[in-house]
Image 1 (cartoon, helix red, strand yellow):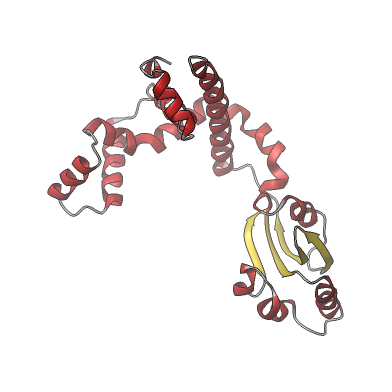
Image 2 (spheres, rainbow, N blue to C red; image 1 turned 30 degrees about the horizontal axis):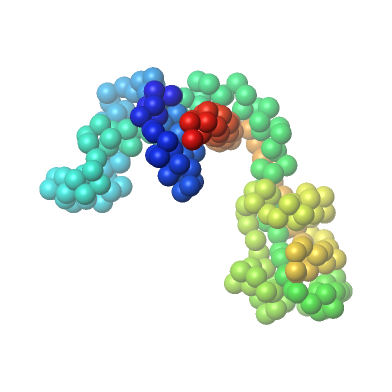
Length: 238
């Protein structure tokens, strides 16, 4: 890339050592790809207004101070303000036609789940609590609030709604295949025993939001792949 041609061996070594080379290449690649996306004057003004509002700067003087403190030009600020809308348009132009196949590959990880979780390190106690819930001697939520050893203790054991893919890989498979409302025997994950009950499972839908999400994932994957290839070529100079 032309913008990276100025980097000498010392600069490349410094960036590599601090794990900054790949992020720099990604940023330059992204800027290059988005530079060809045009935005209407009306949309540009609207985006700039929204961006400045988010900065929560009460007047022009405070804005100028902020701009100077961050060493930004008006062009830099425009790029920051338009980045999201340009990225969406770029992804729509280049990756929308691949969004469905990406969705089908990832669907099981995108399904939304709500589940009850009780996490215990002692296998004996985990088995005891499972049997209490199974025999309806105690409520799952009560036991989780009193004895669970994870952050789910604060929500009486309820986790979600969240994508299944956010869970531990072993737990993901467990959540995908179990009947709703049926408490499951403890499973060991790392150093804990987990008692789980699926409360709700909502299949992901390929709507406009999901298409945008899949297209953005494809774009980010493309940026990562390209950046790695470019970095390898650059590092040959060292």
